[in-house]
Image (tube, rainbow, N blue to C red; front, side):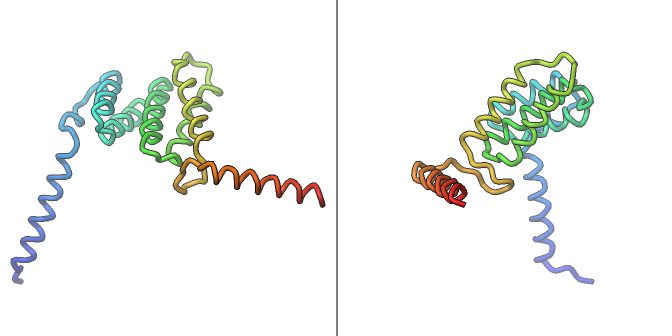
Length: 162
């Protein structure tokens, strides 16, 4: 069976895409390191704007050390914070809620700052943005807030009338 030049070119093109996409993540991400070093590396990636690499490191931390509640809280908070900054509110909200539930249900000694930060970020998410499941969330304009308030008042008046 003859393979044409266009098939060879397509194969070469696809292979080059694979190699290029593999090089977009830092090479040291595959190194075997302990949990503290993972956190440090992930934070360095995050500070450098490499949020994909940071999220990979935090997910690896969850996979390898997620049974340790301290590391789970740290990783989930950092992933949620990355998602919040990326405006992926539907992804961030359950992570913040899980962190708060962990603190409510555990008696272990956990770093208190993550509870405070999770509550603050969740309140910010809930107060500033209209949360509608998987729909894109956005801040309401003054006109939209006034219209929403007027509709709520009309509903109350109608309900009171009947």
